[in-house]
Length: 275
Length: 348
Image 1 (spheres, each protein chain N blue to C red):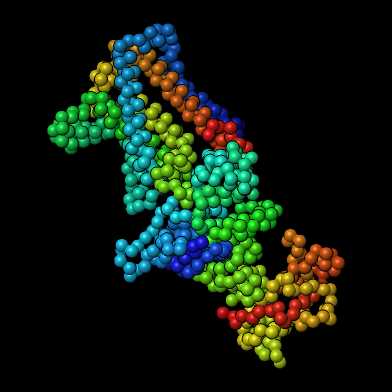
Image 2: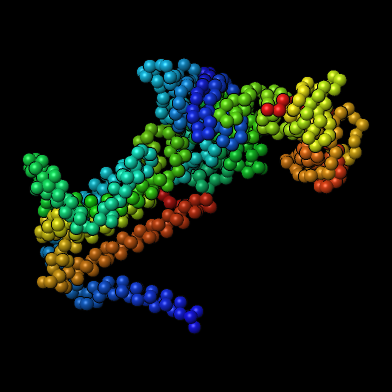
């Protein structure tokens, strides 16, 4: 009897967990007819939020790639004192509550913050602007990219870098022609994770950038703004984000499966990918 | 043609690599056991590792110079991409995401077609390294290294990544290539015979230091130490030497006695090359002074030679002889060698 209890217990627990995770997602799409959900997406509060979200997430993403890639390469390839401390600091925002990120950003860039006087002297007011949204997103999402990028760079065989150098390529050319192409898949995965995290950013944004429709109100903030007055609109935005996240996740998984089979077939047959 | 001059000190974990060597228009093989510091020397010449001090120069072009007493301004260390070297890595280090043609062109675009033809890889131009055989990869690696028009060629264990069959074919091709190129070439191998076939001179290295430099046949005939002798594949027997008329008699630790034309006294190592040892079923009445008998301990073919071990001595004979004698493991046999074929080394 006890023999059967264990697998039974596993099955029951898994079913409960699965149902618990799935039910809210299902509820988003079934509570009201799909047609009405789609109609809600035409409301200005939704379209404004889409524009704000797309703009800020893309800019944040560009900044993350621009600064995060060299930082990750440095951390992956150079050994210097304090390196592991630097890696830990990069990863810290991952485990930090978003509210702490928000208060930290205010304390640094707010009007009375660390850099506040300097910024207002320059005529810049960061909090409650789209720049603030970008900063909040970048702060919270960049560690996901940088961490993944470090792993991707570390996986590039250093002998290939040496070979490139002895063939007359400088460090920059070696990076562009050897390291980047070989780390490409890992970097793309990191970028996708950071993008998804950035798109969902809520806590730090609402504290540091507020929730002004058409300026700083991103999709998650719009859900929060609408859910007590217009539950259907909030549901519609929720459905939209579920779809976007699911597409990201699935494409990430497909890409990784492709990469894995690509790397095994490297030793068996020519992968027929474009050069 | 300018000579490559190396005179460097480079600290490693357990010893310092300290080596001075000049490579003219010839192939020099650095031979030594694994971990002797051979690859470190290649990496230092290529600029991938910085010696603590010394000089690396090609003719009057200084690639590295750091002499402790010299002023800071006199110190030089060129980046790898500014040294005209072609380095062929042990596992070839081909770029997996580039085609054969792109790999070769990475070193220099001017001679790609010529090199692809010369190394018989033109039909593979569009293939990726992952799909190639070991021998093909090696040819791509050589073509790529030469595409840069190097003034020095460096080869790190060029045959180690190949299977035994491919190896002997490729060895011949490589020898021909190196002779034809006429570049100062430094190659690294742990296999003395590979070195002897490929190189004009061999430089035996142990714990970061050169212990003997010379033509392969010289090193083979007069190894400078038991270490070099054993690296060349020689048998080493331990015993106590004492004069015996014009010869030296060595009472081996096994109790048997052998004679040598080398003169020595006290504790010695006796070195005998395996091809100097002949095998018979009974003590032969020939000119050999030395006979060691015992059961055949092992018997196996290496290429077209058969290695037979009798009484602690390994002999190389032909398969035909082994068959004619009806040798088999466990059968009694006698190993014979002439006193003139032995080398004695005072035991260190």
